[in-house]
Length: 432
Ligand code: EPZ
Image 1 (tube, rainbow, N blue to C red):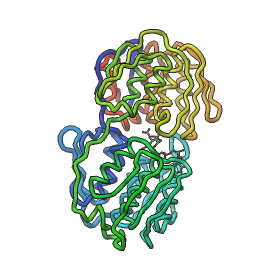
Image 2: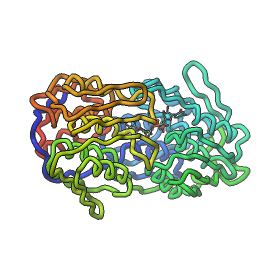
Image 3: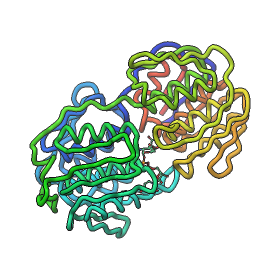
Image 4: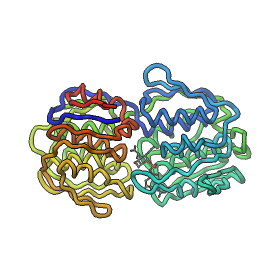
């Protein structure tokens, strides 16, 4: 699938942000921990969510779309232990069933997620956490096998505040008797959303959003074990009705696009606090940002200037917006230095931007961007989801026609992206 963009149009109008991909994906897995039917609202209809729902069905669960953005999930008493490789390999977030199944049935067989487009993405911190809580963890033939043994609350220090490891440990800990403490935990808003959901189905979690999270697990002496739901959340018979937080990365992408091509865009349905690092950075480059209750208006009134970007775990500048920012910084006056401190191979979009005339030098974890450059439309390829979003920004700002192939990667994380940009005045369409 390709996206074809005619550059040069300014963007004007309003865009409504959907539910957060990275919250929806973990909440779909976490639904296995609830004791009853789960209804999730504000779920983005994107490819990664569809794949995650297919895994629920493959495990024996029920996963159905209802009206706009609502998903109904329920799980039988008997749930499969093994996450199918053919489905799991399609998205990294399949690894979030590790903690969810560990909590629900006390065992799980999970394919090791492949290395991927943005760097080697190990699972050592996930496995360290489960082992510390008394799960027997084995790696064999490309699979992770985890089984409940002597489960007990543990104190787990994360060498890196990994989002997925924090989420998997939180979920698994719900089925472990005693108190589990996660130190140096990830603080992303999606972690807080997961904690709110788990609390809603009976878990006791404190500190989500800080670097120290405490989880009170299953009632002592009644831990999870193979094939039987643990005490605590699962046996409460409690279902849940939960609305996914807005997607801060989708919102930031539209803010960056508006900065790249001007002129004035209002972005609706956002949580301002989640966007602070992005607002601050875009103000640094000279964009006007007027903040409302749950929306903001970005206005480009004059030339933009260079700035430096350092990606960091939340509340630092999000790595998922590093590539779109790289596209923007090609267009501004001056030299910008981008350092990517979260993933070890997330500059792949630079080569594609250089095909459009960008002047970027990549060296290790840093990229130096010279501007301003006239970006010229070209045939380019999306190497990963967020790099694809960056190429849309570049195509909208560039002169002439840009053709992005492998555009299905963009569909993984952006709902109705062509439709939304067209509604703002962009000239962009899908071509099979
Ligand atoms: C989540 O990925 C997001 N995905 C990513 O979004 C996001 O970029 C990332 O967090 C960082 O914010 C989902 O939530 C589904 P990590 P995750 O574990 O959990 C290393 C997007 O575009 N690490 O925080 O996989 C790892 O290699 C996606 O929406 C270990 O070393 O990220 C990486 O360098 C991309 N050992 C760093 O930590 C581990 O056991 C951050 O990874 C785990 C991670």
